[in-house]
Length: 69
Image (cartoon, rainbow, N blue to C red):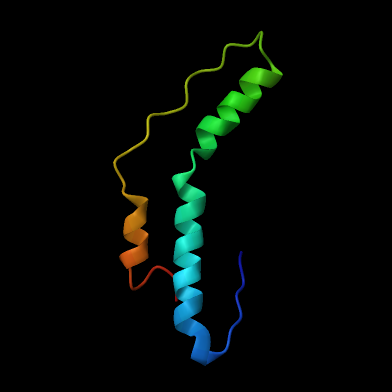
């Protein structure tokens, strides 16, 4: 659970920053990076390929009025 605090006068900038940081976090291939790290750490183990990415455009979050309220 995340908790955020701001004054009412700075709600709009906070919402913008939250959206931007969410997109920055999820544009990165976290699952693929984890797979590669484990494969390097355990080279004798054949890991299954990570699942294919879907078609969600995560940048649409930037336009969502109800992403975080």
